Structure formats: C-alpha cells, structure tokens
Amino acid sequence: MIELETPPPGQPPASPASFEHRRLRDGTFWQTVPRYAGVDEATFLDHVWQGRNSVKTPEELFATIEGLVDETFIADAREGFELAPMAVRVSPYLIAAIDWSQPYNDPIRRQFIPLRSTARSDHPRLTFDSLHEQQDSPVPGLIHRYADKVLFLPTQTCPVYCRFCTRSYVIGPDTESVDKLALGKTPDAWGPVFDYIAAHPEIEDVVISGGDTYQLAPKNITLIGNALLAIPHVRRMRFATKGLAVMPMKILTDPAWVDALVGVVDRGRAIGKEVVVHTHFNHPNEITAITARAMAVLFERGVYVRNQTVLMRGVNDDAATMLLLVKRLEYVNIHPYYVYVHDLVSGVEDLRTSVQTALDIEKTVRGATAGYNTPTFVCDAPGGGGKRDVHSFEWYDRETGVSVWTAPSVKPGKYFLYFDPLNALEPRMQARWAVPELQDRMIADALAHAGGTVAALA
Image (cartoon, rainbow, N blue to C red; front, side):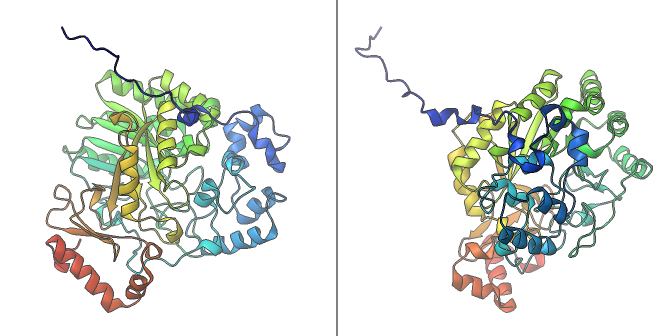
C-alpha cells in the first residue's frame, strides 16, 4: 500500500458569486411600480387579477409606467409598437420585474416592449413562417415534421405576447404589420387532429402548444390529455407553457387548472406514459421566489418540467448570464433542455445573434454543472429541417454569416440555410448582402462547400 505524504489538494473555497443562483427576488417588489404600490400580496398572487390587469395596448402600458420613464422612452416605444408583428400583452408580474431605472438595457423589457431606436431591418432572406410549419401541417392546428412526433396547436392566445415569437404569423390578434392566419382553436375543431394522430401509428410523442396551454380551460386540459392517452401508440405528451416565467402565481391560485394537469400526469403514469410540462425562461431575473413556490407545488405533485430558452442579444448572449440562468433553473427543479439560436422572425432583428455566439457560450456552460442539467444548444433549421445541434452544421462561413445544415432523418437529401444577423457582420459584408446577385453567389458558395446545390434547398 502506498501512503501519500500530503493529502491531494481539494477545490478552493467557493466564491460568493457561486451562490448567486440561490438568491431569488422576494418580498413585495411589485410595489416599486406606482400603479401597484397599494397592491397587497394576496391580490398580486391572484392569477385572475394578473390577467385582468395585464396591459393589452401600448397606451395602457404607458399609463402603467408613467413616472418611471421619460417621454423620450415613451415616444421610442410608441413608434416601436407601430412596427411590431406582435400585439402587446404584458403581465403585472413582468412589468414589476423590469428595472425601470435603465429600461433601454433591461433584458425583460427587450423581450416584450419594442423600441424604434433599436429596430433593425430584417435579413433580406427572411421569409414569413421561416420554419415552414404550415407546409408540414396535414390538418389545421397540427404540424407533423418529425417521424414520431407532432405539434398540436389548440389555441392562438398566450398570457403574454413575446416580441420574438416564432409563430408571430399566427399568434395573437392582427397588428398593423401582420394579418394572422387562423388555427383550429375550439374543441369542435380538434377532432381531425385526434383522428390524424390515431391514424398514424408511428406517432409516439405529442407536444401541445399554441399559443400557450396556460390559456386552456381545465376541462380542455383534461379533454386533450384523455383523448391522447386513449390512443395506444401515443407514449409521451408535453404541455408547453411560458406561464411559469410570466405568471407563476397561476400555479398557486388556480387549483382547478393544476388539478386538471396533475390528473393527466397521474393517469399517464398509471398506464406507463410520460406527461410533462415544457416552459420557457430566457433570463435569470425571470425566476423569483414566486417561481420557486409555484415549482414546489408542481414538484411535490410529481410534474416534471423542462425549459427551452431562446438566445437573444442583450438578454442572455453572454456566458455568465446563461450560466446563471441554467443554475437558477436547476435550483428550482426545472430541467434546462434546449437553448435555441434565435429563429429568423420578422421585426426582431435587434435580438438575433450569430451561430458563433451559441458555439462560444456552450463551451462555458458545458462542464459547469451536471451533464443532465446542461442544455443542448440548437439551431431550428429554416425551411423545416428541425432542431440541429449547433455544432452539426455542414458548413459555416463566419464572414458571410451563412450556415448550411442537413437533416437526414427529417428531410433526407435537403439542405437548409441559417443566416446570421447582418449587423453581426463586417461592413463590407453587409454591403454585399444589399445586392441580390451577390446574395445568390454567397449562398451558392456556401452550399458548394457543404456538398450541396441550390436545387437541393428545402
């Protein structure tokens, strides 16, 4: 037996910053907003009050933040809303979470309140419904892209409307810049969806989204859950909601909705089928003590929750912020699942980042916590290629910002293109993108390097 003369060195003492993810905002923080100064905790935690007092027009928002910002900001936001593809709907919880002493830089404000001063022109190759969801829709309200998985969209409404919504072409009311498409959004219209799923035995996984399942009545959570559980080949079900990030108090004060959800989870578990919740946090400031209380309810009742984050400039596009988000999510028992490179969505070019940004941040996040709590960074390939690991591109030209992807199990033989935002490129490259002929040449060159041709584009 070999004896060591000195014990091996251990890890150095953890710095105070190592525990930042445990410091959740608590107390009556909403009372710093004059409109909510007299609102007690019981009222603020009432999900009905939150819904009724969510701002639904720009003018309602401006009245709510009066005295917190100057007229320059108000004018900037007013012009920003005129350009936005999404209608405004922001909960009091979110409004109270914004740092109004620096509204231009606040990461939550950036996601929900557009400004004219930061607007950027869309990429010239951006298309309406860039993920081609409608092309993969066999019946209204259903998207069937992956062989064994479908996306069911039973509602077009959300508790809040995010500026960057991939489905801005269909979610929420019409705006000055976008007339929305219609989905089958009533129980009477869901029959063809259930019939389609039942007729395709290869489908084992169903994502219920929209819109947002927070907006479904408890009876409809039960209806949808039971209908899908009754289909023998459906093995997994995910209820998608941003609600935990924008109105967590619903879990605390809407027992009927929680009971309906838990009922589906429990029935699924009893017959060997998985039913979980997918949610959507983008910044650590969105996670408060109220979130922790809501998650304690779901955790105690056996509801597993995963998170999907969108990578956004000025929100979470630095490694420190992303790592804090990941650690804070796992601290409240939310599993970090995906981080998406921002989709090509109209009107939010100021929020997009490059693929390289995702590659760089992933390096820091990986290894900082347990592997099962490390999210996968993905690019949802425009044109319907689906989610591709951010490292798996066939070719990536950092100068032109063109990346080329394939999806052999989704659409074999096809090539898909993602384009970095122009303002992430050198000025000379931005100038090249202003010329259509040069655009075609840059795309053809990228495809050639990847081993494809323009004819093989999805």
